[in-house]
Each structure stands twice: as structure tokens, then as C-alpha cells.
Image (cartoon, rainbow, N blue to C red; front, side):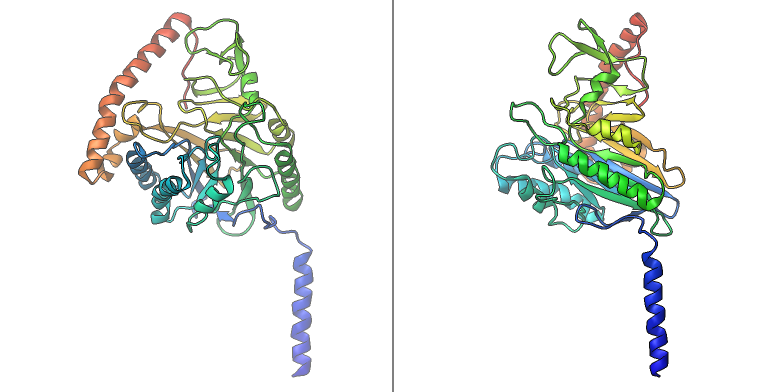
Length: 400
């Protein structure tokens, strides 16, 4: 009996040593969420929601549209990238967050949160307090990185194979800050860049290859202006640089473009090397940001798609054709690619499957309101685009 026990113990010890010789696909640490897996069909769908700016006057309709979007898209993960419920008091913010998070909690949809410039700017509460509110819901996988990094909410979301624990893809979530000491928009800080670089290198060592990835944060990177065409005067669909007065920018024929520019991009003022590090590492396919409410556009620059998503809210009388959400889909069998599409509220409410989801009288009234106002907004935009492209020969609207 003793010999049998000793033999079993020896086998267990040997197995432990052998397993230890093989590196894990990824290391679970304080800045890495639980692992997600691709579905049995090899797909993974992300719903990108940003800049909801929930207040008493818009929360009901905005949240209802987000609920309908979830019911239609059935995402595997929701990415919330800031400026979500910036109310004047902690109590009011908690109430708005509850109204938003109940949508995902009731549907058991996991949620990853990062913050924007407005989420804690009034000083009535901290980012850490707001993150604790989000993490009070079981659907939240968000991480408060504490004193480890600048800000609150910089972490990694690993995506593993549908049939095992092999790491297939990665999602980087960054807190891009709010404002610098001079009052400009902030950007991802040096220590966050260093963390990304070290973690990216670690993933490559452990897996024997680069792990392709996407980035989610609130504020777009300054390099976006390098991928646009600089002009010395204003013209249709050409916008003045946020910081450099007298400089105007529009889509450049030199690069691949997506969507439309409806306002000037608003990056941070100082560049701490985030984009350069990602170009050097070569594992980031695209960066998805919010912040610029009506911009649903992208530019491919140095191998990375710098992409902005629409504000996901509904204010009743404005921008039913320029507010909405973004869907991103991944395929574990093609980890070096991704698919994305923008869904504007006006197009959304005209889909038959959405009409069938609107069960209440309030839902139907909301959808009808968007259709009516959106028709005129869309017609105006289409006419402007047509005449500019016809008379100048310049493309101002590309496929999303």
C-alpha cells in the first residue's frame, strides 16, 4: 500500500515538473482579466459603446436604444470607452451607471470599461470610486489598476481558442486620461506605454509568436493628423487642427480611409510614445476610440487603423444619423484580420429585425421619432457629400 502511494506521489510530482516546462499561453496577473474564448464557430463579437453622456434628459431613450442594439447584435463582449455618466454628484452618477449596466447585467453580457476626460473631471468623485460602481455588477470584467499605472482602468483582455486555452488574440484597454497640467487633452502616459511594451513582449515569448490585438481607449492618438492631408485654408469637410490654428486637415489620398470626418479629431497635446511603441511591436491591428462624438472614421497609418466610433446616445433632436454604435468581429482562424461596421441610429431603426424588437408603445414612438428627424438629416448630409464630390472630385465619404 505504501509502495503504491509512493508511486502515485512520484507520478504527480513528475507531471507537475513536466507541465512547468511549458509556458502558459498567458500569465494571469492583476492587470489581466479572466480569459474569454472564441465561440464554437470560431467567431467573437464586440459591441463598442462610447460617449453615452447619460443625463436625466436623455438616459431613458439612450439606454433603450442600447438595449435594442444588444438584443439585435448579441455581442460576446461590450467595450465602454468613457464619458459614460458624468453627472454632478456621486449619487446621480451611480443612478445613471445602474440604468446602463442593468442592460448588460440582465442579458449576462460581459462589460469592459475605460474612462474618458469627463468621467471624473468635476472633482465630486474619483475614477476609482466610479470603477467600483461598475465592478459592483457581476457582468463587469473591468480592472482598477490601483497604483500600478497612471489613471484607472488599464488592463489586458485575453481571447483564447474555442476548444482550449491557447491564446489567440488580445484586447488592450487604456485609460487615456483627462487633461494635462496646461489644460489640454491628455494621452496614455509613459508608464502605461512601458507596461504595454513589456506585456506584449511577454505574450510573444510565451506563445512563440506575436499575439495580434486591438486597442480600446477614449482619446485618439496625435498621429491621426499625420495620416491626414494638411491644407492652408478651410474648405468643405476640411477641419482646423485642434491646437495649431491656421492648419486645416482632410482625408489624404496617400492612405486608406474609412467613413467620414464630421469634426476635427481631438487627441492629447503631448505624445508619450504609445502609437510608436505599437508600430514597433507590430501586434496591434487597430485602435478604437471615442471622444469625437460625430466622427465615425478611420485611417490606416503605419500598419494600424486609427479609428473613431460614434457617440452612443440619443438626444432627441440631433444627430440621429451621426450617433450610434460600432460592431467588431474576430475570427480565430484569421487572427491577423478583423471586421467592423458602424450602425447609425437612423439606419438601425429602419431594419426589420429592430422593428420587431420594439414591443412597447414607447419603443415604437422612439423609433418613429428617429426615422422622421433622421430622414432630413440624412438627406442634407447626402446632398452636401454629392455636390462636394461631384464638383471637386475629392472623396469625402468612404465605406465605414
